Length: 588
Figure: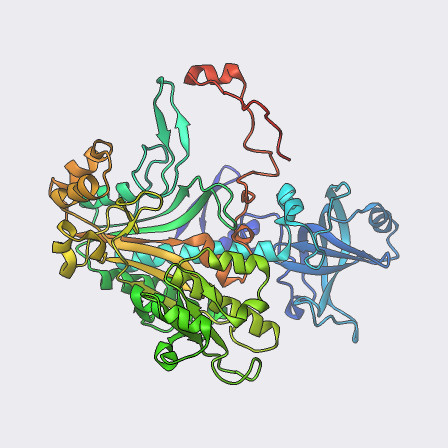
């Protein structure tokens, strides 16, 4: 039984009592979408709404909406319809009413899901005309990314972008179902206006009306989700908007979305199992199934075998130490490398060696300062070589491994299956790293709230560089798509890390330290990068292709021209004035 008010009368019973509820979509003017009509609909009266995709032969209108295309036939005997057809422009918005019928034999279009039918129009109403557009709304038409972003509302009409956004929506809904309905998580929103967090990425500042006081936009809800654990929420998640002022890093966004998760009374294995179940539950069936558990390797193994902490395991080509083979070598550059402390000779073994000789195809002499001597360098461009030589030893070899894969694929060797999805856990990261440019100083490898591995906990007070953290990264096809850790839940231990190891101003985190000293449970969590994950799922060249309104690589909105200038008058309430550089030039 349901009740609803219709025309000021109380209607009781089922939907058949109300004509407009008989449609599959009770809230829309349309009877069907453009992509759903099939031969079984033949003979039905329909009302379609959409955009004009094509005008053909003064006979046909190809109508498009988010779901697909339908061919509409304009009768040559109807002068009024013919007149309207002559005035139509591509991308105008129209309403079509008519009757579904099978296409004549031989005129079916097997490339269209609706290619067996057409709609014989009885009426065509132009709801809005369209000006001449800067580009055609067709997937095969090439557009620069800058033009696509400038006219994003047009680019979003494309089939590919419609599919990407809908996949994102469906994945998000399935994730919510899994977390809420199957595991009792609570969806909690946390503030966007906060204060500076020590360590990590640079944060955006938001002025307040109090002189000299600023908010920070959170780079993640890290502190809030830990505070929710102290509050006894037990299991929290949200689709969190995060902000990082990372300048012009390629394929990064200043604002992005992460699936943020935190749990009380959990260990590392529990968080990893939850994420594997979450992905398996929400994974689109058309992409194939996911097998569990995901492979897991340590950070040391990843760097040893792949030269990367986020290895692409769709292909093998592991790094192999062959120093012993060349102990008595007379080859000068190999001999020189082995003669130095920590010098070694590494090789990349290519499965199909016939492309470039037949044994260890690339021999690499690695000097301890990170420089490289290799015959492979002649195959690399000067910019590639320069970039590689700027790396330290293992990351250098990891990049070279990927360069080898690209070169082999360019020569026809099938290495990386573009349709495969290889998930991998990487664990046992260092808890601390030497701070770049500041000898003797340390920084967190992950963030300052990560707990040490239990076996290494005593080393935090004596040899912090030897401590492994309870930090875990989730990698997909060589890209990091998630990262998390078990947290420090005792105030004294957190204070020691902040004050004595990282040399941070602990007053900035006094609220968190007080909370940890108020009966904080053991807890841990993870954040999945939703944008990155979906871009890999749809094989998009950039994460911008799965975000409705992204920023450019410089952090600009090319459509609205944000960020914009603010007048001195508007800045006065915030006690801010702009000091312009001596020779300010407008960047285009």
